[in-house]
Length: 573
Image (cartoon, rainbow, N blue to C red; front, side):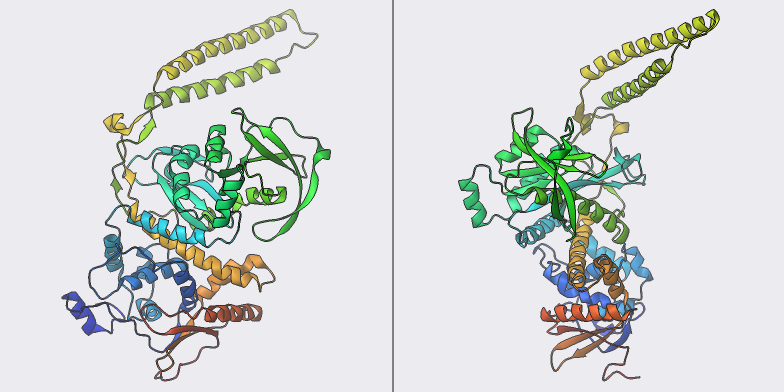
């Protein structure tokens, strides 16, 4: 049965289908439990909806209940165990003690449980949408901003020849799949949409993100009244980068009462410096900085009227922004636009700390036949045009750099004229080739259905259900961690240390002291490395105790405190 197995009878009954109900969660006194500090995240995990799952999530009767499985997966993410396979290198009895069991599931068992939970396609997406609706409803700001951006997940396997995407962090075109994420201003995630064939940000906003936001985003009575009274009022603001620049999209969203905030792709000439004024701007993280800002109205090619806000940097560069949010002050718009980097920071943090880009299962599945891809012939012609255009630019540079100096002999003048004539001939020849290639590209269909590709060029996509399920749990874990970070920041001299301190708390040993008489489970977290951090941890424990959280599957209220290692009362030595 494996190491740390002490509840033998229950396991034998479960193996023959006679247990009747999952094993009860029963805590016993324990001392110096490795990583016991991760239990400090349980109140936040429950508040974020870890166990508020659709009824369709069910498991056959066995030793491990479904609540225990969800808790294991969430605590694994917080403990930086980045894959199910890495769990085999963790002490099973220590982890079992944290969950009120004798040991946690063996890797194969846990993998089978997750596979059963992910049998029905679309179930994880449904759960993610349900949670996202709850998270959105909890936003307290009257003017809500949603951030949308794509994250490229590189695929190094050989199961399928995925299309190539440009990976900015590696500056290479690699086989990958793209996830479009929707986040809050502070980077907290709501959901994502996977695209095995990237249609671009504009198409994803139109076809996926905006319909989803219209269905699930909260709308208060005050907003309803404002929308009815003011034709320029907006429901919420959608923030994205230059890839989403499209006057047609801006107008379409304006008709749907959705404001946009993005960078101006074609800002034209700089504005006079004397038009800029210094404003005190509060950033998403709470920092206050001075920015030189200016604003004008502008009209796009489709006659849409927008606000254009510019920021003047110390180097003299002017960053231009466009928005159809006509109510927010300039400093708020500037802070909201530059808060887009919180989403980039979220991607990097999740990739490094939570293994966001890890492949969670091997295998592929069919891509829907209606999916359109770039015609291979169109791509080849486009590549040739780009290559020859680059050659022509280099020849133009050489041609322009050649200069006839004075005092040259007749032979040197003839050599100069011959070389310049050769360059001009090569340029003219390239002009003809480029024009011919452009004509061929124009006559070639740009996109075709996937099923129209030659057999050798067709591809499948990576399986998505299990990935989306585990990513949803990672979202919950990240949001739970962020809620603890927000408490710590109020008491830290250096707020940037909050996440590092939370990770240290998760790794710290703890004593578990159940009290069946008073119906409590005391989690005594050991002292940290500095007295100042201990003081902050005491504040965190006080905040957690105010939640009066009951550990799932029990009637024990969690009590957190800080203290030295000691044997709990009643434990034999």
